[in-house]
Each structure stands twice: as C-alpha cells, then as structure tokens.
Length: 415
Ligand SMILES: Cc1cc2nc3c(=O)[nH]c(=O)nc-3n(C[C@H](O)[C@H](O)[C@H](O)COP(=O)(O)OP(=O)(O)OC[C@H]3O[C@@H](n4cnc5c(N)ncnc54)[C@H](O)[C@@H]3O)c2cc1C
Image (cartoon, rainbow, N blue to C red):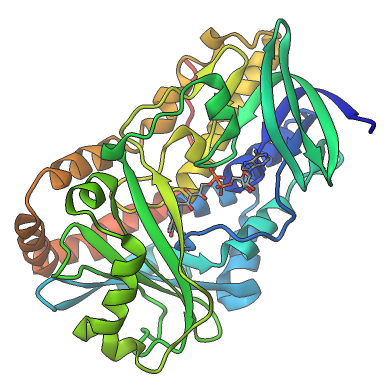
C-alpha cells in the first residue's frame, strides 16, 4: 500500500470552530498550511449549540456580513434572541432581556445569542476557509505523532489510505480527546475543572418563548447542576444537562439517567415535555473548563479550544473561547513565521492571552463549587430575583457585551 506524503510548515489537527477559525485567519494573512479533520463535514458535535457574543465578535473580525446576512433572521438554521429565561430552584421564572433603551443605543438588531446545530454552524465556518491557501483534508484522522529534530511526523489515514504529514509547527485543535495533547504530554483530567454533559434534540417542547429566549433551569432536586432548553428553528430545541465532574463523583450521579429521569418526573419539566418527541438518543461528551491552566504551547506546538481546556466554567460555553484562542494563535504564528523561529519562547504570552477573559469566571466557579448545594440554590434565588440586579444585567451589562462583540477590536498582547 502506498503512503501519501504531505510536507507543510504548519499543520492544524481539527477543523471544528477553533481549527477552522485559525485556518481562516492564516488564510487572510496569506500563510499556507494544512488542516485535517477525521470527520466528513457537515458533522455533528455534542453541544448545547448556543453561540455567545464571543462567537459574534470573532465572526465580525472575519466578515461582519456573516452575522447580519447568514445568522440573523432565522435563515440557515439559526435562531437569535435578546436574552435568557432562568427557572430558579424556588420555581420562580426570571426573564433577562436586553431593554429597549439599550437596543436603541446600539443602533439596530444586535442579538445576544444565536442557536444553531453544530452540524450547520461548523460547516458554515469551514466554508469560510480560503482553499487557495489552506490545504483542507477531511476524513483524515491522525493516530500517531512523533517529534523529530526539525518538526513533527504525523501518521494516520486519509479516506481509508495511510497518510504521513511532516510539519514544522503543529497545532492541536482536535477537541477534548486531542491526540496532539496526548503526544505533547499535557493530558490530565482535572475533575475540579471538568464537567460532564448530555444533549438530546427534541421537537414540540411546550412553552418556548416567542422570542427564542434561551432557557436555563436549576432543578431543586440536584443543586449545582443545570438543565437547558435552547430553541432551534422549526419547533426543535437543543435540550441538555450538565454538572461539574467533582460533583458527579461525590454524588455518584449518572448524568444521562438523571437527565432522562428529570424529563419524566420533575413536575416542571414533565409538563413541558408531555407532548414532545425526542429526535435522537441521549448523547454525552466532556467539557474541559478553564481553571486547570493546562500548558497550551511548547517547542513547535500550540493548543486551541477544548484541547487547551478553555471552556468558560460558569456558562459551559467553549465555542467562542475556542475561536478567540484561534484568532490569538494566528498573531503568534504570524510573528513566529516572520522570525522563522517556532521555539516555545515565541509563544510564552499565548497562554496568558487565551485565559485573560476567563479569570473572573474561574473565581466564581471555584467559589460556587465549594459551597453546599442549599447555599447555591439560595444564592441563585436571591440574586436572580433581585430587581436591581436584573436591571443592571439587562441594561448596563448587556449593553457592554453588545458593544464589545459588535464594535471593539480584539486586542492581542504579544509580549
Ligand atoms: C453537552 C455539551 C454542551 C455544550 N454547550 C455549549 C454551548 O451551548 N455553547 C458553547 O459555546 N459551547 C458549548 N459546549 C462546549 C463546546 O462544544 C466546545 O467547547 C467546542 O466544540 C470546542 O471547539 P473545538 O474546535 O476546540 O473542538 P471540537 O468542536 O471538538 O472540534 C474538534 C475537531 O477535531 C477533530 N478531531 C478529533 N480528533 C482528531 C484526530 N485524531 N485527527 C483529526 N481530526 C480530529 C474532530 O472531528 C472535530 O471536528 C458544550 C459542550 C458539551 C459537551
């Protein structure tokens, strides 16, 4: 059997949101590279499918028309919303919606959340890669990675045939089970900064908000966990449930079973799901959260997105932080290429840059993770029911988020 040989300066493993975004920005800089993914696209990824304002921010750096023409107005499988609905442990329902004055200030329709099946969103993003600069190899799985004197030797299969890729610089954008991470020796699961979550698509869930508010429910029976319902077009919804891994271990919880049990027996959910139909079996995946400070660079390598463990620990959102890490990485790679130096010292500040927006969330998560369940529930009931807090969130804070996502350039400090 013949082996296909590929030689490239830069190889990106993984074409999810992180890998595809890096490829797009390298393309804009005119930097040739190879990007491989084990899957054929469109492909599914177990996820809540919620696209936050970090996603919008990076998309606006790629091309603002993507948000206005492709994501808005319910086209292409996207829903958009101006806020969220919380159902608190005490049963109270709280809607936090960006208020009209703040909407007027930001001049026009600027949603806060989008929801799109990952098969659609990831495919849309990969479609933005400039194939005259990027060599895109789908159905190409990397299984073995060896360090060589002048770079890396990657072995795997492409469309069922053996493939060998030689590269100087290796980028791991291959998600939570990253093969790159394993080979650079940094894979450790840190239960204190990891979560387990499940997803199931449903149709016909009752009581979805007419403006597609995304919903987060905190079941009283299992504090420190959250259940979500994110509306999709055509009466579908992404429904899921997740919690921190140390909580799962401490309480010996089977997340999948707990999820199914909640839908059947929790009075609030049972009512809403009584006429709904599941569209698939329950699917689970891990959530590597920011907080463990996994090393994300070294001599001739770099990690992005889930491979770098940078999911926001309070919200579970990792698509936006993954895309931000890719934008940041593109700047460091550009400089390394200019200096023809891919040594670890060229990427020293990369780790700081990809964590800089997550510090406050890490602190909140650490605090919440160390308090008893009843205190968590009482705190949520008190804070989210507070009118002043609601006003501050729907007015001042949301306006700031929108300004940042739609109008503020992403700053990357290289030194
Ligand atoms: C249940 C659940 C709900 C979530 N909900 C949300 C949410 O609502 N919003 C949000 O922002 N985040 C959410 N997240 C987190 C989010 O899914 C991830 O943070 C995000 O997918 C990270 O993107 P990525 O590009 O780093 O990795 P991925 O999206 O995992 O992409 C990695 C790519 O690498 C490829 N790959 C893997 N191994 C190899 C290999 N050996 N060779 C070649 N290719 C390979 C895969 O095929 C894949 O395409 C959720 C996670 C879970 C588990």
